[in-house]
Image 1 (cartoon, rainbow, N blue to C red):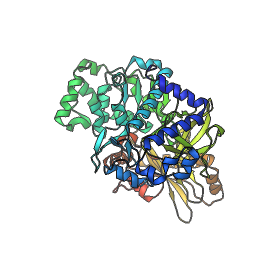
Image 2 (image 1 turned 30 degrees about the vertical axis):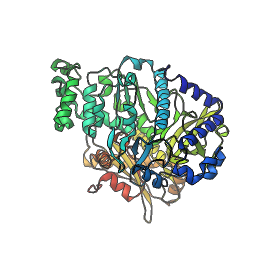
Image 3 (image 1 turned 180 degrees about the vertical axis):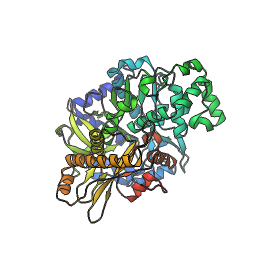
Image 4 (image 1 turned 90 degrees about the vertical axis):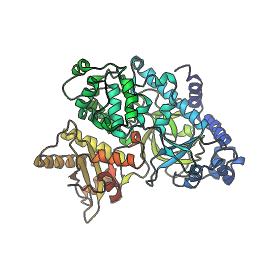
Amino acid sequence: MRGAARRPLQALIASTEDPERARSARLQAVLAIMGDSAFSREHGLAGVRTLDELRSAVPVRTAEQLRPWLDRVERGEHGVLTKEPVRCLVQTSGSSGRPKRLPVTDSWAATVRELQSLWTLGWLRARPELSLGPTLTVVSGGVVGHSAGGLPILNNSGRMRAEQSALVKARFVEPELVQSLPSDAKLYALLRFALRAPVRALLSVNPSTLHLLCRRLAEWQEDLRADLAERSLRRGPCAGLDPRVRRALELRLRLAPGGRRVAESLPRGPWTPVDLWPLASVACWVHGPAAPLARSLPDALGGAVPIHPLGLSASEGSFALPLHPSWPGGVLAGSGHLIELLDPSGGSRDLEGLEEGERLRLVVSTEAGLCRYDMEDLVEVVGRCGRAPLLRFVGKVGRYLNLLGERVSEEQIALAAEAALATTGQRAVALVARGLSGSLPSYELGVERSGPGLPAPDEALARALDEALARAFDEALSRFNIEYRGRRESGRMGPVRARALPAGAMAGYRERRVAAGAPDAQIKDPWMARDEAEWRAILGEEGEPR
């Protein structure tokens, strides 16, 4: 890994020593790749030489505002955003409900691959024991379809897994075919392949996916034990697998340890990952609204396992790399894409003049032709590495509950939910907040309690637990948001009310998102519903809260 990463590592080090010089170099690289494209001609980019000139020529745009160009790429038109051919599209969730399909060029893929190698090297340096066993990864499947112009449409995490070197692929416990199975069948097959492997690491972008994996491990325990005894893949969600797929996977399983004696030697109580595997590390998102779920992973895993952050990354690229888990954030990847950080007034900041604690909007220009593309991400400066800033993800811009101007962020709701559960000593599958307007506006906290290892309490006890949880959430939210506290203390807002969500509500939400085309490994369990449409999307069209 050190040998393969030598050149990108030297470039990253140089970018921390002189971030503005590195940014100027990335500007020239991106402009050269855009070349004589339709976007370049329309914005007069041939005459652009400096970042200030680029800012004058191209406004900041969201994915929705770039739709006209992205749609042309999707229809198969050449030379729209770059002079390089688009070899495929990656699909991710869109703010309008319509998935975003972003172009992939060879130059962009090479940059992402280099940055990913630096992240992997950082993980291995922090946890050398990872080399002693395989990794269990949960990513979205590869090809999901083709565009109107014939371009393959992929999920980015599956694309990145498929492009790993043979050396890295040899460390995955599961064959690539497993990642393309339907959601629950994929999780079952992943667990079945991992059951008798000395898994050293778990990797998934979302900690919520790892929580789900742990719940399913307990739920499917006896089916997994029976399949292990028979060296098969015929139970649980895999009972309906295509026979050809099953044969291919069972051929691999017959080569792995198994049999009745091995199956009976496994623990009898509810399984947790720590019971089954010598885990050395878990890798996932750890900042912003994901932070409480990441912090609660030890309970789900069955013990304390070091967590390595993924850093600031998305389907659009990688932007900040955490080179050690003790770092409060990731170092700006100045050797990768062209990155701008905008202050609340919309001004683009000098990278060396940033102060710790500042919160800024992330804007990127990439080798795939996204020019001054608004990620709609809010990031915080949490330190420095050389002269480059360390950044952590705070949340999506505009993700607020705002009944009376209090602007409660999704991060604050997640922190308040975490604190309320800790204060009351309760556990829950999911907590989701929404605002209720009326003569006395208030927040409502949806609570899903029952699941594997979480038996549903009787109705009277559940009501008492809900009331205690709502009070604790109300108090915690008042600590995290002073505007909310002021409105509660003045009587302008009423107390938080709790409402039971149907069992399986969050699992059903994930299934519907997958069915609508969202990459399953990237689906985040929501902490809030901003309006009735989001609330009903969580419950499903026929779901009604009690």
